[in-house]
Amino acid sequence: MKKIRNPLLWFIIVLTAICIVIDLPKIPINIHFWKINVDTEIKGPDLDLKLFGYEIKKEFNIKEGLDIKGGTQLVLEADMSGITESERQDALDSVRAVMQRRVDLFGVGETGIQTSQIGDSYRIIIELPGISNVEEAINLIGQTAQLEFREVDETATEVIDVYASTKATGITGADLKKAVVEFDQSTGEPYIGIEFTESGGKKFAEVTSRLIGKALPIFLDKTPVSFPTVNEAITGGQAQITGTFTLDEAKQLAIQLNAGALPVPIKGVVEQRKIDATLGADSIKKSIIAGVIGLLAVMIFMVLSYGKLGVIADIALIIYGLITLAVYKIIPVTLTMSGMAGFIISIGMAVDSNILIFERIKEEKRAGKPQQIAMELGFGRAWDAIRDANVATLITGFILFNPFNFSFLNVSGPIRGFALTLILGIGISLFTGITVTRVLLRTFYAGGKK
Image 1: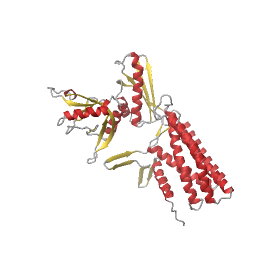
Image 2: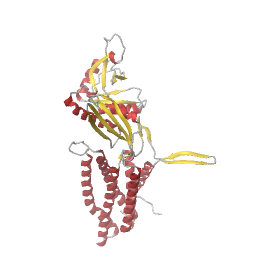
Image 3: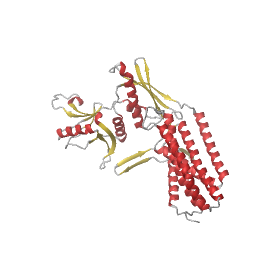
Image 4: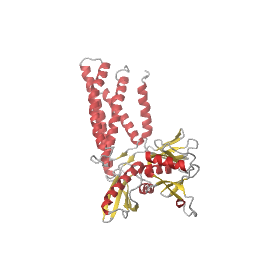
C-alpha cells in the first residue's frame, strides 16, 4: 500500500475529523434490556478548561433564529418623566441603541428591537430568539449599571446605609473605556479588569494619590461590589474590580459596564410572552428537504459530468459542509432561513470554482498536455477568475452586513444573517475549492506527484 506523505493532506484529514466531532448532534440512547439500562446521549464536546490561569468555557451549539425556533418577546416601558416632550423620541432612540449593544454583548443574534409610542407610553419591544433564561436577559438589558468609585466620608457620624457613608470622587462609568473578565493566576478566581479613558485615567491617578492607605469602595447601582485599599498611586489608567464573583456574574458585570448606562430609567417589563417559530415546523421541514435534494442533485451532476474529478469535488464539498457547520457552532452563528439561503448560495460558489478548474484542466489535456501538467495549469489559469468572482461577492456581503452600523445602509437582522453566512461560506469555499480539491487531485488523480 502506498504511503501518503503529503503533510497538507494529513492536516485536512485531522481538520475534518475535528469538525465531525464538533458537528455531532444530540443523539439520545435509551437501552432497557434484561439487566442493561442505559439512558444517555451522544453529542459534540463542550469546551471547559483552564489554560495559563484562564478558564475557557464554550458550548458548541447551533443557535436558531425566531423563524426556526421561536423565542421570547419583552415589552419594556421607559420612564420619560424627567425628559422634556421635544426630546423624548431622541431619548427613546438612544435607549434602543443601548439595548441593542447589551443584547449583542449577551450573545444573542438576529434580535428584533423596535420602539413604540402609545399616548404617553414609550416602549421598547425586544424579540430574543432561543433564549431559555429569560430572567437573566431581563436583568441584563434593563439595568442602569452605574459604576462609581467613591471614598469613605469621614464626617459621617451614623452609618445607616453603606452608600450614604461614602462620598463621590467624580469617577463613574462614564470614565470607563472597556471592561474585560480576567482570572487571578494564583487562585483562578475571576475579576473585572477595567481600562479608563484618558481623562478618566488622570482622575483615577489623582484620587489614588490622595487616598493612599485608605479604602476606595466601588459601587454598582449604589450596591457595593468591592472595598479595595489603595496601596499606591495608580497612574496606568487601569484597575481591577474584585469580589466573590462567579464566572457568569463577572461576565454579566463586564457586559453591563461595556454597554453603558441607559439614558432614561426603565419602569419595568410591561409584557412578556413566548413567540412560536414564524415559519412553522412544516415549512422548516420542507425547506430542509429541498436543500438536501438540491445538494444531492449537484453532487450527482458533478459525478456524471466529470467522473473521477466529480467524485473528488463531492468529497471536497462534504468537507466544506463539515467545516462550515463547525464554524457556525464555534462563533456561534444564529441560523435563520435567510442565513440558510446564504449557506446554499456559497455551496454553489464552491461548486462553481471546481467547474472552472476542471474545464481548464480538460482544455489543457485537449491541447496535448500530460495529466499532471494539465492539472497544475488548470488550477493556475482558473484562479484569477475564481478570485475576482469571490472578491466581488465578498464586497457585496460586507456592504449587506454593515459592520459599522452606517445609518444609510441595511441594519435588518435577517439580511445581516444572510450576509454573514454568505461571507463565511465564500471564505471556507475558497479553502475547500482550491486547497482541499488540489491536494485530493494531486494525491488521488495525478498519482500523488507534485
